Length: 141
Picture 1 (tube, rainbow, N blue to C red):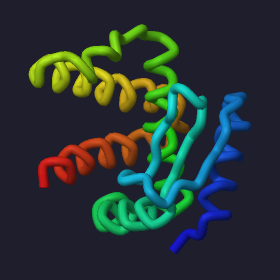
Picture 2 (picture 1 turned 180 degrees about the vertical axis):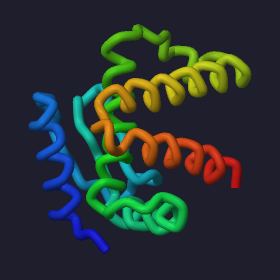
Picture 3 (picture 1 turned 180 degrees about the horizontal axis):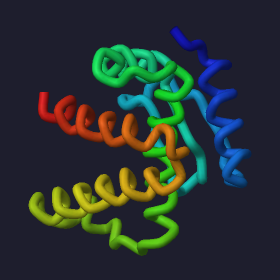
């Protein structure tokens, strides 16, 4: 089990490695393992959710807990890169119809995985792709 300080250190090291200047914040109310907050330029994480997510995918993806946290982080960084490169009309998420909202959410999610994949070390790419597929199955259940 990883503790808050362990996860925070992995995040900070990885961000520094890629010259990304973002804040890092623990949030025990976060309903997902990790997220990027575009308005505060912050990576937020919930260590209970991170450890639970790792437990769910660890049976299929045989990597260290540290590398699994990095994979979760690269996906979160993917959101940052998507918002940086694409100017989505976020009003759709508030005011669009259900189909428009789902379409935009799907596009942002796909982009986040793809952009995150561009940063991941080559030795982890195959595992990252496995995590992506497992994540799709976890979302369905």
